[in-house]
Image 1 (cartoon, one colour):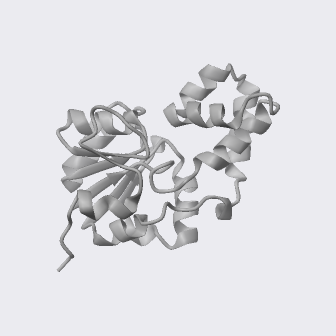
Image 2: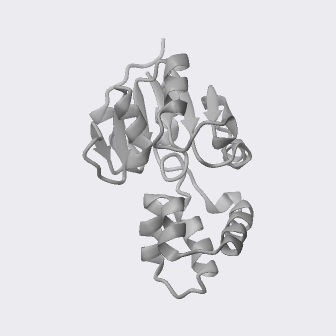
Length: 191
């Protein structure tokens, strides 16, 4: 099985740390739950929703780079799926350095054949370009994400989709916990 993964909110529980950053930038005037909810739509959406200035966006990007790697944990059960998959790839809007920083810390670089970021020149999700590239190269069987925009490109390409800790109509199945993955999506052991 070949899996295309989103990064933030799918492999790693990054949103609590991002919520804290945005909470500080907004002057602690907005409830953290509201910030989290808007970030789960997308970072671009949250920027517009909260009317952030260019200066605030710069501050957020700087503060996000300074998030301690120990403050962001992988979701429980992810590593077992990574081990059983034949090929894993990542498509994310996060920077390559940002992704590899966390992967190295947890010793997970070995699990990924390729990491595609905006630095590769593809348009942002939900454009299909990056997914088409990865699907052509790796014959992707499943795309896993935590937001609808992570699944739209896969859906358009006929790739099966899994929504993690969220709901959307286009997902082929939904997971709240990766412990249920092999029940919902049976995988045989590698030879």
